[in-house]
Image (cartoon, rainbow, N blue to C red; front, side, top):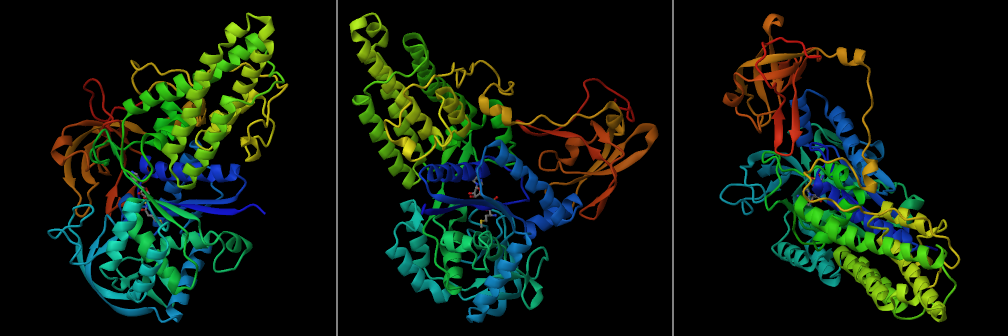
Length: 630
Ligand code: MSP
């Protein structure tokens, strides 16, 4: 029976569109899942979206749509990104799925029946942007220790989970299972936190309604983390004891970012203890990306869009960069310069080059057919060692080290070519056997490299496998054995796997890389369809901030003969009211009116999300308001 392996990503909030941070967690989990599948495990790889909570409710209200409609829209952004990045998840869970709601309510009832939930009064602080409750002790000079913003003080009726009851059991578990929280430094943080004492946890809210109702009291909705964490059970069919549940629970590893470690390493295990369910084997917390040395934020306009990165460099190079650049567990910095540097050095020069070099020699000296020959020797030893070490590194999710080992083998192949000098052997007919041995060994090494890179760069590995003429089922544990053999195989002509990127080119070039084909063309429309849009020039005459919203400005737009319109635009993070008064903009006039934060918006101002953040679409010479755009 293949060993089961259950790996999860966090479920992503739908009040934000996907960025490099989301891509990172998911690509890492995907590489681990693909590796385990290759090694013969029966893998269940889960990702999904976290759709309840106050932030979603507020964002939806700002956009004048229902929370579910907002979730339905954003969820497709995530699903498309996973397609573009070739993520191989086995299931996608949404917290609005009926199966999930049932699981959460059952978990609640189970814990309540145990006597671990009671009604009390909640008197603390709540940081809305972070969806985190804070105690007085956690505040730093009255602000949230994570985001620095001022939390709200709350006093409301709330259900509490008796987390304090599980303090000693959790501590004992953490001490007995050093592998439970990784990396080590994070484990120490959590140990310290738990030793400081666990308080009971407020697990319901009455201040908003977008959530799963508390069983038996629907004035309360279930606190987002009690709801969200349960996704790891509901996707397996819990509360039914399905075959899936039996095979895969407890999870082998929850891959998460360091910001959400406490929820996974303290709250989650205590919920599970209360429900008498086994605990996951590991929670692995990775670091955070900054961008060009700065914290990523919408207001700075430096949010890295993974879809754009894939368009520029291809899915595989982007995946490779994320996992190679930074040790998994530590923080790292993203820059396109570093990305292009790695592309050219590691992918074009090393991996791509070794492929074209060796296959071109096979073509020249062996008519493109892998000779039958003895492949024992140096290269065999190196390859076997690399396979072994990659396995050890993948076991501890040390992706960057696994890649270093693979690149060690690639360098070994290049050195072997230089030592054996097949071009010199080819000149002496008496050395034919030696030449055949060298070429067969080199091809065997390329085959092993193809398998080893496949969890990281699945598209490239498929291409390489096609060149090598590998048969179905090539990507297996058995295939990693040296000598699994290409003897007699006819090698196809290899196109360069990674054509170099000219560093003088500016970002935004057309896709050149193999994976880039994944970025889809948008649907075509007819001129008549375009003409249905009533697009006109308008001049902003008045602008003011919308109370209680960081994003919205209320504008009065002059459309000349077509009159004036009130438009509510989500541009306040970038433009102050004074910045936009007098500006000529492009307005979509026949958009159905909608209410944003209770204010009617009678159109839409066009803007573009560029490299430097949001920018209003403008005109390159003065034009009177009301001009029709066609
Ligand atoms: N919905 C919760 C998770 C619930 S899991 C039961 C959540 N969602 S999130 O969308 O805000 O973030 C999801 C993941 O993205 C986290 O693992 C987080 O660490 C990661 N990242 C967000 N920004 C990041 C970076 N700048 N760098 C690396 N990862 C970061 O939290």
